[in-house]
Image 1: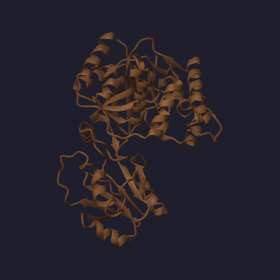
Image 2: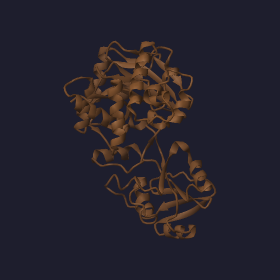
Image 3: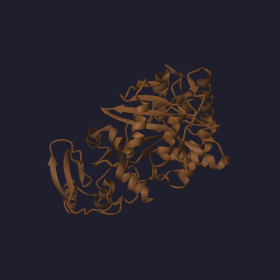
Image 4: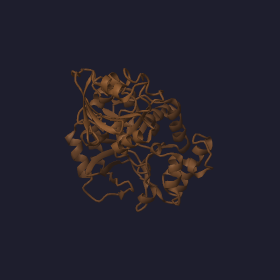
Length: 405
């Protein structure tokens, strides 16, 4: 069973990437996307969030939005802003951010391998979000948002990507958030065959970010039937050691009837507690930073023997079992309005701000989930708790798209 194959990417024409590349569709609101793309008709947000070209009150899931996305993608191709490679290729996609570099492979990933669990998942999806991506794929007849995946240790593949990225890049631009995006094309037959063999020898690939996109691609393939490019989904696969997962923190809107003093007393049953003069960034899974009453505390769980269950040893599971469920009475964080989630990209200062403003009564800073833990969960066929991982930097929409022939 092959894991990947080369594909004919639809990508920015030479010199046009700065106009085209855009953040992923799901990290911006419609209003933010409209402002960001204002004055630039070729920004890929006109495809990924086409409601920005319709009346502001337009429902983002209206049929007109998907039709507009298709019109805009055709226009970008017709104007020569986007070009499509003549032959199937692989692509090296490198992200550089805050002094860290990760170099991955853009490829069409097999939905057969996805169904057989050689491409492994760790998250649940929601029907509404899946439906949105299905309608987008069907409307534009392409997958325009890549799924970010990780691969286990593979020095030979690392070396292949490094060699392919040793020359001049086809795309080299730095976005306004400071992330540098580079792309190289692997078009030699021998190099393509070597990459395919090396990836196929891996035990598995692991979806990191993009579960709704892969699930939507699977639904489209099932509906269309037969063979063809729709049996694959757009992906960029990185070595696990180079991927960056930031903390995904929790804020609580009230103290569930506790005073701050009572909360600290209850926490002391399971944690050692030390006041801190500044923000607390945990250095291990058993450690938590807490903002309460205008100050930071360092909490360290006293009794947490190692567990063979990869879910039970996650930082969020330890906090849930010892704090969120027994003290705050929250058993379903997906639906309970008393809890909210703050991605690590917003910084620990955001936790302070939310508590100081009264929008939250307490906030907890978590140690980031590690890639090895994510892979262990996926290997076990288990599902991570909601909002467990926040990957940075993000892949750009518009760098490569997978047209369904």
